Image (cartoon, rainbow, N blue to C red; front, top):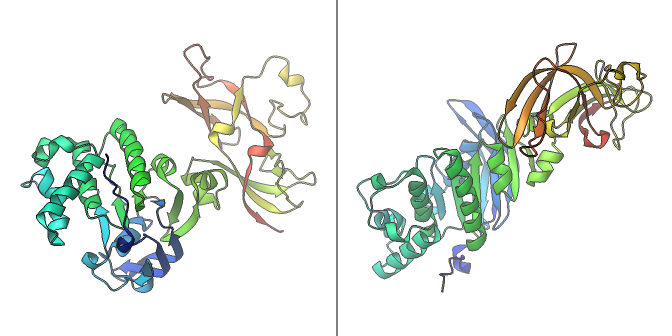
Length: 383
């Protein structure tokens, strides 16, 4: 029978409330989070570029950085002023931070020894934790005898052995190769669902955050720019930054015409169900994978300019251009289309199999088009 590692009632539920949290270094503020609620038992990813404040936020929760304002509440208790060892949290570091002179079992048992659990309980917890990460037969080895992926699992087992209500992970997969990262994503998510621990995961990898999370907090300039499920932040980004950071969206801006379309400097963008008022300034986005490329035929020059899909650049929902760059990425082709005015569109063309035709190569004249329903409204301003 497999061990039940779910948290007992006295070990807390893992509900975290952050209110008015600010922090900085040498007088410069790097974190300004108005409010963030982390639900009991959820997997929350904190996503953002380098320097956005995501690691500082994690260190504030852990107690390694003292905030200059605000408070952190875990399961109803204000822990803002408590030292790290009195917060009952688990932590997995980017560098793993394993003791090289200790065996795997001793590393996993370290937090239990600090908490002065008896030998029998320690041994039972170590066995459970190593079994959970698939390292039952590695208890007697030392970190130097393990691969990077195995060391990462030991660090995870050590954090889980204390059965924390909240587990904090600071880019723990960043030192692994691409294959191991994909494998560990699946395992980490499966472990989280099995034990029910609240996990807060810091990463700059968009794919990682989208694949792992119940919700994603996208950070920019020390603030939470958007908080939502993976599909919400991808399909309905709250700002230009979120749209371009997650999925490299093509952003277009211009003036709304009398027909409700957007005149984006020569590109007419039909905006589908979006409610826009003529004369307003608007900013919209189109995802690269939503753009379709066609090579104009000899008769296309006869098409009228107001015909949807017309290859002369005046049609609704698309624009003419020239392929400037094409690269194969395994599951898709990445194509850059250069427009007559110097702007570029990023296009992603799915690879549908060995018999599929490749997208047009560099120098080919193409027409890039998209469905009006795939246009995302980012900003609108009355003029």
